[in-house]
Image 1 (spheres, rainbow, N blue to C red):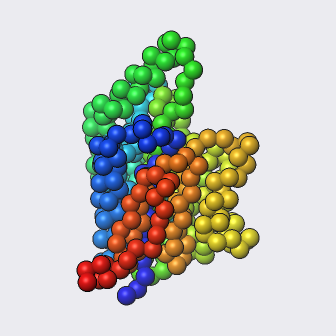
Image 2 (cartoon, helix red, strand yellow):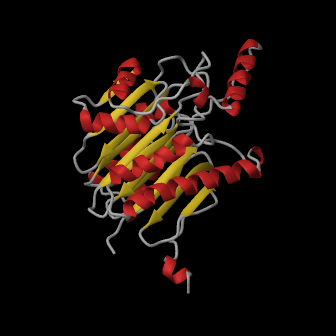
Image 3 (spheres, helix red, strand yellow):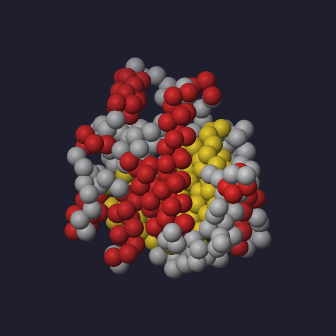
Length: 321
């Protein structure tokens, strides 16, 4: 069997086990399993890494448990805005969108930008018009705003009114990286941004080399966490650079990127990366990162907490004996 693999993340944040109830944990695990299967099915049928990461991210964009698409965080104005990017490691072609509203699947719009546009990144109404011109599905604001995110927004407004110290805003992001049967890598990242962010704020997800990067020479990378710090550190490209130019292993490069300029770039960081052999690395400084991985003919791995260490899964046929 030809090798192929996919890995996903649903965001990293600093939380304690006591702060997430069992029902929410189960929602995360089920959502990760669904997204992993969506991407794996594409690869198993011989599909491209690009299509696989889109399928996995689409699944999470539809799931209100994740901060991307439906279930996105709300801006200061109580609205949703989305950023997304996708990159083909075989051609270095990219598509990215920023501050987009109404588009049901921002990552699919980013993919259309990659395939049909002379530009790499479109933002705001220009990106929305491009979605209309390419017949992508749109939704009204009520589709995206969930009770959970509305409550988080209202809490933030009350904190501001009372002039209380504000904790870090939720900064979850979803992403996927994949290796297909042809040996090609791809990466995709999609986010609903920060709770109470300014209208028009664009995070690291659509910044190529910041939150998203893929190059067949070394790896594919998708980041999550404090967008401004990830952008300033160009962390996705740093993983690639440490592999290509310093000869670091995938896990070592990922771990180093998590710690890079930690004194200047403080905040939550999570990095998902995959090399051109299908190996995966998860790095995060939060203790909690929603994540999953599955390689050809192997059982899927889904985890949330740092204590859940990835292990090489038993082959499915061996499990069935």
